[in-house]
Image 1 (cartoon, rainbow, N blue to C red):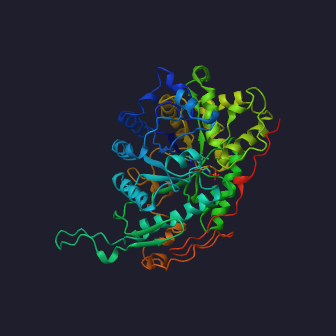
Image 2 (cartoon, rainbow, N blue to C red):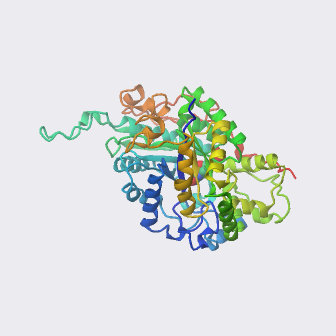
Image 3 (cartoon, rainbow, N blue to C red):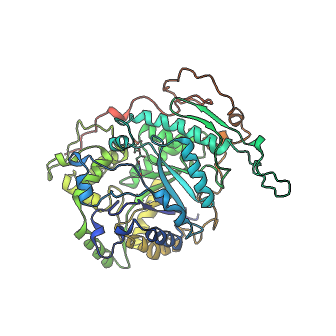
Length: 513
Ligand SMILES: Cc1cc2nc3c(=O)[nH]c(=O)nc-3n(C[C@H](O)[C@H](O)[C@H](O)COP(=O)(O)O)c2cc1C
């Protein structure tokens, strides 16, 4: 049987300085300080095209991390995950450099307005010819809440309930508002758009209100490809319902395999083809033409690595201030809240201790974060790295990798020039895009718009849900979150994700000493 072919994305963030690896911006051969220029992003798009990379995936958030030592000072001093531009603005210029590479951009359902976000993605989808994806996040930090005007962050599970309602609203705008034959543009008759086929969306929910047509006519994909990364109970339920791509942060293939299996099963329970969810774990390889060259690249990267910045980053991901622990003693997380955490980070920490039988100290953890993080960071030849990828595909049933860079753009140049040819030789990677010049969804899933078994398709024009969007229900008692998933009704909030307070108040398991 032919091996399963994987796809690659580049994992990027639009900030000046370090993202996944800290301190490397100080090197002469690193271009991270030019990430406030268009040229940087256009060069990256051209490189990705040369490597037949599926997408450039922009992580993003507001504010930044002020958990380590109770401030953002170390992140600022060390040039790590700060000075952070809005990625949405680079995408059109990048898209102009390639007909094939797609662009995933992160936006928050907690701080965006559905109408505004729908318009932005419809516009982006038009001008990229369908090469865009939305990484749906709920935003997990207090600093982002405060930056955009809230006293404090909305509780964890409630954010996912808000997000679930948000999705209903944007599906209505993208899928229901304009009929497929509403765009006439007939110069002879002078009819531009058939007004009878363009409906106003009327949504009055607990969290979101919209009264209006999508401002933009249907774009190639209508709904952008949907990515998601949360792995808590509510995060996974959300992904099983909405996500087409899932971005994983797993320490080992065994850990990833369990997430993939559970999420595919949850998707199947929602009536979806489990294989239509595509899983992309993060990987940060150091690749050399020979093992010796790779080892030399590692040694050089270690010279510049900044473990304090790494620890400050992990503090931001978990909401735990790692500056308070003795630097060389095993970390004890007993009693620490996970309320403001990327839960996958706690899980990766626990799994890595279990598997390596070695406990983390702040010094070790900081260095590991500085050199990539708690996901695979293989060092070797292209064949060595391809072996690791192959093992993950076989053991964890993943569909591709989100490749981060240690040094910029050197790590990605090595992927394109060394790894891609090796993967192609093994039949693990396409020789060309499935649909050159096609949409992201065509290249990822083989179809242009949402699959019929995707929840969002229930909003398509002509479906029962689409037909009732003009009806406004009387403002009613807003339904409280329910314990069981329930089909969403028009204009009402339905708690379709697990809504019991679960992880948010539970203390982290003690890290074994
Ligand atoms: C691999 C990975 C990447 C993420 N990237 C982002 C990001 O770019 N921006 C953001 O605001 N949150 C990001 N998150 C956070 C999640 O979207 C989510 O808000 C957080 O993990 C809390 O949800 P959970 O408890 O279900 O994990 C990421 C999480 C993971 C695991």
